[in-house]
Image (cartoon, rainbow, N blue to C red; front, top):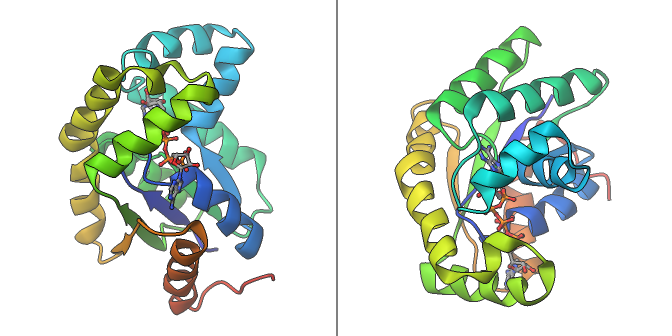
Length: 197
Ligand code: AP5
């Protein structure tokens, strides 16, 4: 199995690149942000709880997102690999993911981190906020809150995977296709997964 984490701050292009990567390499895309927004649109109890955190730019509690990922992994026993997008976002989530994968006799193969300057991130998110309907994109103070949560709680996850020698930074500014080529080369270097197209 090839299990990839696409890592990076809010607006760095994780969702955009994930769509292209899963298409090319036949991985199952697991985005905790998308899963949570789905719960919100269905007005489930989990969604209503999560919305309180997301609207403020805070993280949803670890046990909620870990539970969601666990049940998604169970739903795809035939998968040849997973792409984790927006997860793990805390050390507790990273440790839980390592354990869940170990139970399935697999592990994270690679963590690719998109590097983008903060000015460019703010520009992208405010631009998307004009049309996305995402409440966490329209207010610059909420966007800044998301960055500060990222720096405090999520950046330490990089060290967790650096210690495992799995972490690599990829420049995340420029055209979507150029960035995709760089990500694809890094994936292919692992030699564990073949492009499907
Ligand atoms: P989530 O949905 O994961 O949002 P995020 O990490 O803040 O990331 P975004 O979706 O905003 O950005 P992205 O990196 O995917 O970039 P995208 O491709 O969309 O999380 C939202 C919230 O849910 C969190 O704040 C938290 O509350 C909760 N949550 C989620 N996961 C959680 C977890 N594990 N634990 C706890 N809570 C969790 O691109 C952004 C924009 O830029 C788009 O408009 C795109 O078109 C544009 N763009 C992309 N690439 C380029 C490029 N190369 N050049 C120019 N524009 C570009």
